[in-house]
Image (cartoon, rainbow, N blue to C red; front, side, top):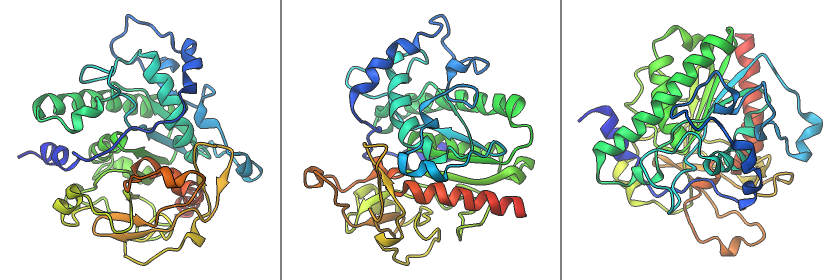
Length: 342
């Protein structure tokens, strides 16, 4: 069985794309792209959800963090967004690259709430013909794999275009969540592992998916807060909850604790959490969640917030980045500084 099939089977998990208020609908007029194009043209800014040459939601900074915000145009972040294609009315294996609803949903959910965590660097986030969320659960593995391959072709093309036209030797951070991480792992293996480009890798924040311990040959998880040329990743669940798909993995996934930035099972209290950012983007919630690694995942006590008693899920996948928003920002800065010293 190929590595890609093994990876797909390990990724059949209960996840849902990042969602929020349908307020993005008012932005649909901004997404009238060239309907004759069935593949993205990365020479056009329309096919970048985030790009330094246009304003986009990833440029947003939560109000309490603005006084300390400092843009570093010498560092690039290549961000791969999670699935925003998979509602009941979304048919087909892959999203239409010109689907205005999907693109608006992408920009005003994941690009705003997740990519913005990395916006002290220059963010490049390509639109891509993402696989339908149902591809993760389908028994039709042939077409499911084709759907993921189609999405990855776009990402690979976008990354090569970025390297050829925009990078100019800058340090690179790879950042992703969920389906984005499915593709980011493949991108790291193809472009960075055992390749000269690894010398430009500050770190990879590949979050929200299993990272099989035998997937990479020599790319390793970060073992402290300042190590570079490595990766971090985690999947968030309520303490004591271990889904069946996690049990079947028998611990075969790398995890880095986003409060301690280590791979051991030391407990990190919520006092170490410098701030979460939830649906109220301009409100930062310090000491919001604790964290401890357990058997291939990250466990935390149920966070308390207004209305939290209504939140019954023990799977915190949707908040993998948001629960640790400020710690991620701070850690990115730490690793960039360490990279420069080296």
